[in-house]
Image (cartoon, rainbow, N blue to C red; front, top):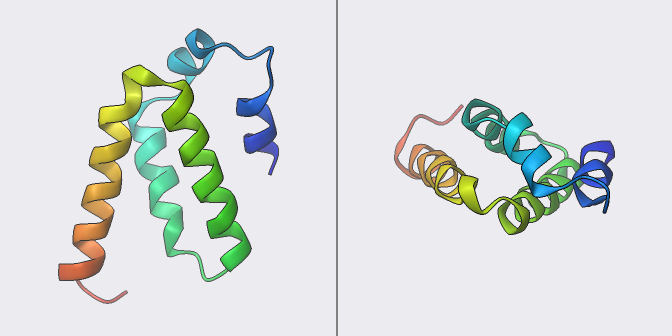
Length: 79
């Protein structure tokens, strides 16, 4: 919830987000969908959607991370 408030805040510009949110962070963030807590997954969807809307330069990384996660979930091992 804190991360969502931070990235939605009007004082945090897209330049600051681009400088501090790496592709590795995005991959780890998408990996959190493995959580059993439905509320956590809902907030995660909101965070990723907000990042996608605000960070045009990282959209490809976000799409790639989601694609890899879904392919792993569909065709990969059942963890």
